[in-house]
Length: 241
Image 1 (cartoon, rainbow, N blue to C red):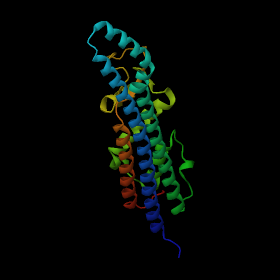
Image 2: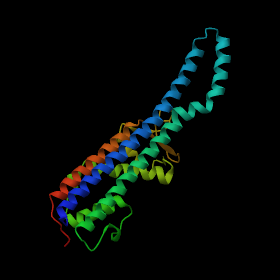
Image 3: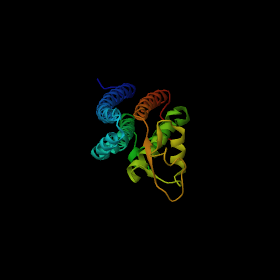
Image 4: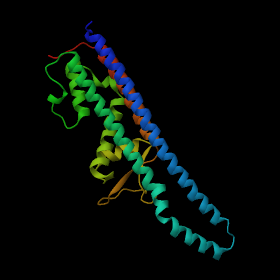
């Protein structure tokens, strides 16, 4: 028996929810594993410094500390700063890719199920996120303001992702949007901000992802966005005029 459009839509929404949950569960497990390993190495490094600090003789302490810093100089930078930030960069990029891939997948299925003559690929746009929004607005006359604050958060994360992809996470005082996003999110910061608290012209700064909580917030927002989007699609009729 041939399925009706509504049944096809319901199955599409079920598949979308299942795909997202499984993929994100795997991503979270992978990144938690890497973060845990980094934390364990950080703990080992701290313990070595604690052992040296137990030395009471000043001369002996100076010699031991000098040797330890020589031994751990590169590891200290990597595990305290570079590795956590780069892993969190990759998490943001992966999560954003999932958002675009499944939004595009949803749009393609909406075209197929509703037998529409045009698809998301026929629309002009600089990225699939905006094209997905335009396509769904066009066929369902959907008000994306109803999808806030999730949509605004996702748009901000797209800007952070783009800064990571196209500029290696670097920015200057001219990147006012990036600075504003950083200032509004407690899980974002500026690398070495404690040393250079004031931004200066003609200097390059690096986005710091303060905590892995940012990507978990990102994932939760993606899931909630799709949940709200599906609900809005169900409540709207096809509108292609």
